[in-house]
Image (cartoon, rainbow, N blue to C red; front, side, top):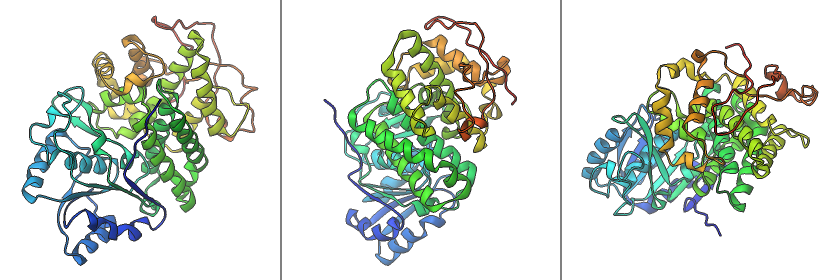
Length: 434
């Protein structure tokens, strides 16, 4: 048995914003409008509000949302008494709006309601109506039931979560993503990939999320380069759709160790969440694949192989080709490495401890203990010595010249070292140039 939930209403497609403006007024005549620093893409909404005499209070955010920031804005919001919250922007803007819609009608400290570092008390009152309008294809926050927030005092990222926090209206207009610079587009698309991948291989999938993930992976892998590097309109639409599907999948399945570690690292690094998850993904994928091989978990291996088949469009793809593809995309999209954000200056021990407390890591297909998380972090950080190319198999014949994406990766060879799951191990380490 499984259940499925998503936003009450979704409007998707080119021109969706213009065609849906009239639907906004059904939620009331006073709004809290949340945007990023650049409010240009919100101008149609502002013009509509003015034409319909809808009162609004504008909040522009310049960073990922902190708990203290949400509480401060909520105080202002309660004085304004909005009938709805409208957020137009990237994932941080959507999460800010979603958190405000939830907390404005609920008294008390925000730490009463957040997970991990708070009391995780259920919301006492339902959120006020929330309308989500993404301008990036990334987190899929427009269809999720949580908001990711930074806890400054604990230096971790945590979620405010409730089924009641699902947006009342999601307007997904791919035209709003046109012109986004390649690296921003790339990190968002790879974040969407990580959502789809982790939901697909998680320890609690269901037939509906499986269908959603496969379609999302198919669309994303086929369009990612054309969308991010060439700003191709049809490809932009596919990436927006895939990101939305990723949000649906993570709402109804689970995440994994890439997000668990990202939530722990995200409170300690000044790095975008999307970059952290994307750079962690290949290392976590390989760790899970190796563990599944040692444990004889063909059910898990078959899912990673299916991902490889989808993203490479090769029926004979090997399970680890999914990791090769991720590495190729990170290189082609020029996503910055975590070392540029000071990951080597963090305490891996503290990161591992914080990650083990997250909800996300509980969804990993195979439980990874403290030592294995430290091991993954050591591979991400170049200061620990040679960083392995995250591929251990030797079949260069298998990596045929017909697969363009494979040619973007470094060459790998295999040593005789052996991995024993659950113990401190030496993977087959391969140096690569940074």
